[in-house]
Image 1: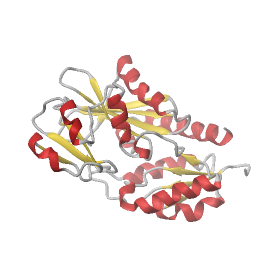
Image 2: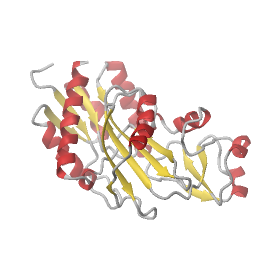
Image 3: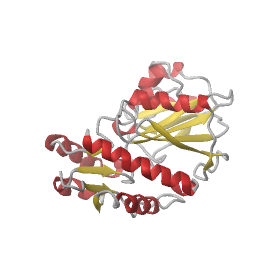
Image 4: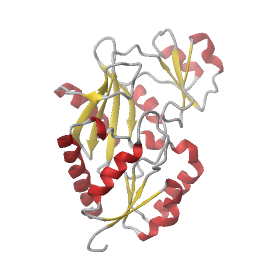
Length: 274
């Protein structure tokens, strides 16, 4: 390792996010990382070809991999074969590995929106006015449909998940670096899910989010726990994002943004020393 570790930072700066500019977040974070590391930035499609020259690959706002699934799998295979350090580490059990975790968590009785992937299990779902049908490999609501119960028999099982549509009060996201809680944001208006505001979580809220961080067993990395506040007041997991979670750093105060950047740098240092 060189005196200053060399990082390959992976981001799709031109990704067309709805109402958001992912590149602004990466510009801010890479400026901070350059103070401690030698840094280069590349598009996700170039990562496999370039990664040998670096001490670690940092995957950030690389866009939904459903758009380049073959290349993403090749990158993972090559990184493992070469022993390349990838941050977040590639053994994540959340969205990094697809949506199977929603089925596993449902079966284990965790507080998650009930999820099934077989027609014979539809009776296990609570009654709802409509049901969400989403691809197992989906992201950013790509392919999401809402259907009545009577249309669920012919939705292409094996490739999709089915969940009841929850009439939630609001969605809230909890952001972690390693196992350290950083901040929370929520969307007070369910119809405007990306209009986020700072959220002051209770101790119970943080304990809810932390249980999924612990379940995922990633010693290093950035994770986002997305949840919804159900009509009964309880939180239910919506998504455990451990691949390339967008952080909405433009929605937090400057002090919080800087504290997050310091935690990110410290996490990467520990990762490289492990």
